[in-house]
Image 1 (cartoon, rainbow, N blue to C red):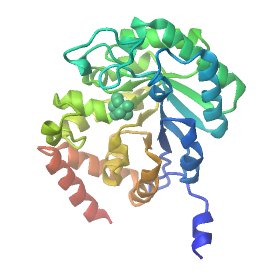
Image 2: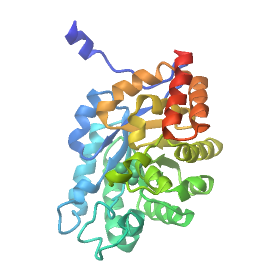
Image 3: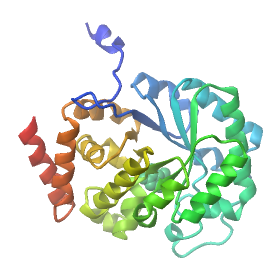
Image 4: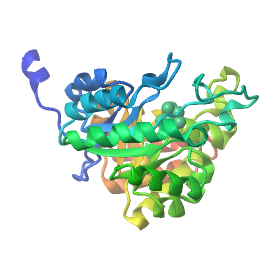
Length: 315
Ligand code: PEP
Ligand code: MG
C-alpha cells in the first residue's frame, strides 16, 4: 500500500474551488531537477545561477553555461522554467565582478547593477540561455534580480530581447520596484517577488544579521501591503506575478500570498507537498479573506494570528 501511495501522481497546485496555482521549484543546479519533478514541481520558478559562477576566477564560458542550461531545460521539457541571471554582490561577491569592497554591500553594486557594470557577463549568460532555449522544448522565462527602476527594467528587457530571449521579467525585491510595479510591468512580461530581500529592504533589517532577525518576517503588514500592490498591478496588466522567496514555503502564508494576487508560488521542493495540501483547503474568496485579515494587522505576529483565526473559521 505504501508503494502505491508513493507512486501516485502528484496533482497540480490548486485552490479548493479549482483555481490553478502552479507550484514551482527553486533550484540552484540542474542536478536537483529529478528530485523536484518527483515531488511534483510543475516547473521551475527560480533557477539561481550563482553557483555556476561561484569559486571561479572567471565566468564560465558560453558553452559551459549552455550545456548546463540545456540539461535543466531538457529535464523540464514542456514546462515553465524561470531562470534568474547572475545575482552577485552583497552576500555573494565574485572576484571578477565586485572589484571594490563596500561598506554596505546589500545596498551596493549587486544584481542587475553589477551586471551592467560588467555587461559582457550578462551578454554571455543571455546568449547561452537563448541557445539552450532554441535547442529544447521547455518554456524559458528569464528575469533580472534587484531591479529598482523602470529604466533598469527597460535595459534588461531590451538586451535580453536583442539576444533572443522571448519572455523577460524582473524580480520585485526592492520596495521601489513594488511601489511602481504598474510601470515596471509595462516594460516587461512578468514579475516574481523575492520576499527574502523585499522583507530585508522594507524593514531595513539585514537578512544575514541574527540580532535583527525578529524584524525579518514576511508576515509584516508593510511587506504584505507591497505584495498586494504588485498583485494588483499584475492583475490590471494581465501579467503573471509569482512569489519565489521563502515566504511561499509557509503553508498558511502561501494562501495569504495567493489572496494578495500571486499567480504562482515557487519554493524549495521539500515544501511543495505541504503547500499543495494547504492551498486545497481554501477557495479564492477564502484566500482573499485571509489576506485582508493579515493586511489589517498591526505587526507580523498579529498578521499571522489574524490569518490563523480567519482560517479556523473556514476549515
Ligand atoms: C529573494 O530575495 O527572496 C530571493 C528569492 O532571492 P535570493 O534569496 O536568492 O536573494
Ligand atoms: Mg533576492
